Length: 58
Image (cartoon, rainbow, N blue to C red; front, side):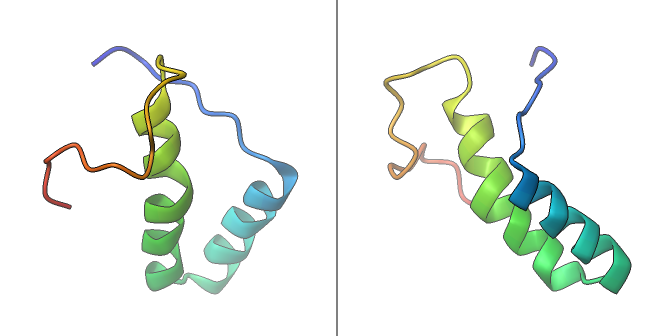
């Protein structure tokens, strides 16, 4: 897989800071699932539906 650059909103950056300050593993996993995963899945394709499964078990 090639390198990937993600753009995060100010709100998403603040959420990361809160996760780090609280050392909140559960919230970190939710952030990856709710924010990072859809952005990674949508990279390079404007037609990819982020709500459809890729068949990969998560």
